[in-house]
Length: 493
Image (cartoon, rainbow, N blue to C red; front, side, top):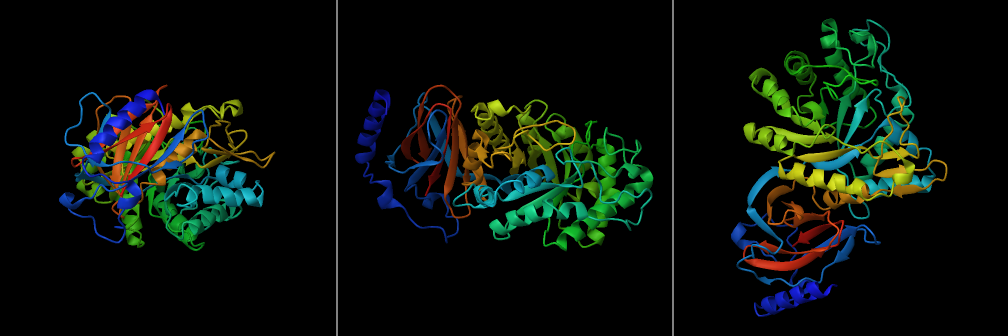
């Protein structure tokens, strides 16, 4: 502890002690089975801090020796996080990543012991980081070893040749392992990268192209068949996105939809078809692309009541600028609709740079700012890739939070795994965001009240110096610190 920090702590101890403060361990209350109390009854009685930082071995390191006492007026110039659980915003659906062909194929190349370790690391909420919301793809995407569709017979309008046999080798067993580890509490959503080649104007699943008008209904039926067939293998889906990155003409699987075309496909085909087949409860997510023009894409759909009634919300990625404010503007304009971060990764892949710390900080900043701008969940891209950043059939290799070296059999946990974990492990599904106001530009933070009535504050320090800060909550406070290039979750009981 630095001399400056010792002085600050000593001052706080005097203030808190004279206010009748006792230690955290003597004041913790078990309120896990109670309903969320009124604000006046909220009891700031204990804090446990979990910290991860660069340059040492801190990984979810636990500390609970906090003093809590009267703190009537924060200082304008001392770093402070001001919490207000009376002001509540979006409810969290979950956090997670993508269960892709690449992740599944890499998984089954690892030793059995490492397979078990990975599943626990991601999906166990006690020993791991408790992923609760994951994405997968409908037939192939770029992170598949080959390009394939579930029906490749031209003109198969009735989908007589539909088969998910390809997925039975790796992806379906992999997804089932994840579901089992969560005790069946894993929400899944699915995304197509392209319709089959025979349905498209360019006769290819790659390089963009569009869905031919005569196959609109067949493509909607394809979604239904996908869900039905997966259900036969005990895999159910919470939702779907209409099209991955519908404005990107990629050298891999891709398909172009304008905002009007996506709206009309949902309104006239996808929405009614799902409803007709008893799948009207599945959450339809539009856009599934970058933040930049997400408002325009959503407005076109939401301004049409006949389309909007089928749509749960808007998905977005991070690959073209930050534009965090666009998430908030959309949430404010259409408060009955949700936003969801559906994909992000860092690239290009370089095995020698796996241990660079900034990869995790990229995640931390985006998570905090997306959440503070009202997103309802955050889903990473591949949860696992191999030592090449793949497999990938078009060589656009990238990082995953865990790299599985299929040559050595080892698992390498990148900083991004821990940064993601500081959110997914402590902010649980059903949590509501509360006010978390920082008076310091270098102290990034967000806060949520969980269903068990605990408050999780995630605070991040991207600077080269330790940050000492206070937490203010209803006239009480405590002093905490985050190491340089560190992230902490403080759980308030």
